[in-house]
Image (cartoon, rainbow, N blue to C red; front, side):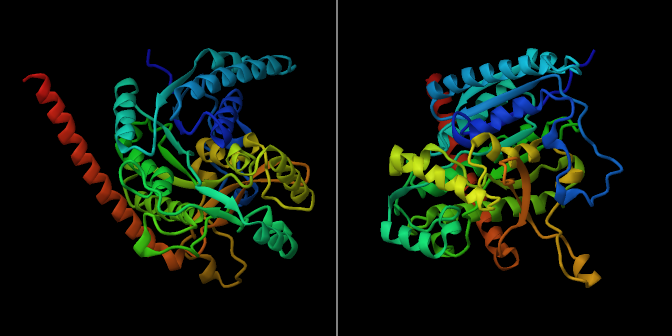
Length: 419
């Protein structure tokens, strides 16, 4: 009898913030035979629904938490399993309970594998370890990232709050950022931790993604931000060493690179495709800004988030579990309902039939805080798609350089053992 096909999912930065929310949401959703996050969203309801392609339920999951701190990851794993057990107990009380959650829970494996995106050698080591332990990977969720915030410009903060209050708590422009920081590998630190480290990870486990069973397929979900912007892009500073807006820039680079990768994938035979999608978690309360402003100011910041939602902002899920909906939808939904951006107000049929523009899927909520998936197009794609090709070419060349150096090191260490 053949073994049941179960998803094997890697989540980077899984021990806290949105990464933890993604793990929790995946576990809760897969307790259901037909997860709600896998259902079509409002923007996809005009798609062909003759073949939903939805899962009839998985009886297990292997979740690989790729984290820098093993200690924090172990604590997070314990918490996740406790939350899952409580959720299953709650489901058992339903009158229509079918036993699926208990069967799923028996086959849940949460593995912890060390990964430090700021060290390319750590990325290669991670890939080697998972390659020896697992026959395939069906999803890679590139969630981990850093922001090099240094200070708050209070005059700028007050000005933006007075002139554009909603934007000030959605895409603030008053956070100062460090510049010139480099990783141990000599690369731009923010650039490597957010983009290049994940690119090396994808390329290093690409063979495992290609080995995923056809019924699961393979996808890479890249995490961008609502603050992603092409305004600060400089082709001569593609590693973002000089800019003092590295966060907004690297998140937009992620939009470009992931979109370029997906367009290339669509040109490959269906059996060799690894789809790439980009998501953003909206405005979420995590410990990143808390460390910058302190607990008191962080409390008032969260209060302002709720005020913004009350006033009609759809971009404030606030809680990591709600902020994870975009990534989990892209993980579980049928490709039928993960479409490129096709909205158009034009009445010209020729305009409406043009190739779809690239989409970014985001976490949204209504006035009551009920989460949903939103979709928008990647900003200024037509203007900057050449930049995406250039960035991807530079990432690939740099990856090959590190790969060649790693192979030389491995071969030398092996030879030394026999001397």
